Amino acid sequence: MLAFKSGDAKAFATLVSRHRGPVYNFILRYVGHRQRAEDVLQETWLKVVRNSSQWQPTARFTTWVYTIARNLCVDSARKESFRKVDSLDAPVGAEDDGRPRGESVADEEGAGPDRAAHNVRMRPLIEKALAGLPEEQREVFLLREYQGIGFKEIAEVTGVNENTVKSRMRYALEGLRKRLGDLGVDGELMVAEGVASTS
Image (cartoon, rainbow, N blue to C red):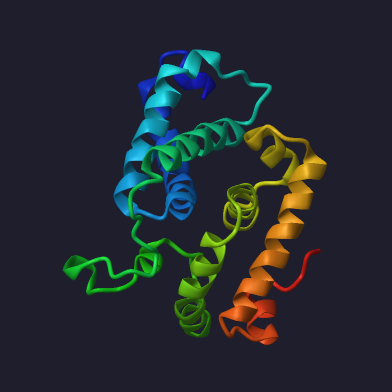
């Protein structure tokens, strides 16, 4: 980012290649609609370019870019709240063999066949349970569990204190556990997915 601020255009390409996938996955899980996610992602990178002079090396680039993405997701959700949003488990279309949207979201590299089969079964249920969480709990869960961002950084991204972030995470885990239980997911699958524990 410092190189980009200094006028090195190639540095921007490096930033995009390094962060595009994780930021896109966060946005897609937040807004739940592929086209909107792509639009928000594009707007995120435009804001990075436009506001690059405001970035300070005292803040981590990931914190800054996720703050931008999160704020744009909130704005997008407000604008689109009156429209019907396609679920992540709705079929994508012929180009993706009719697979659910959630299956087209990138997963951890190197997942074995057992893990992949487990993910195919669990993903639609987790996405459905996530969609039922309050927005502030869902965003903390997504940033922590899907993006691997620490509580301190999440506090910076969301603009609340760290204890509030931890509290939202605890409530998110409790809410997910209850919703998954209501959807018929047993405790063993929840443990495998890391949802049953609030530690």
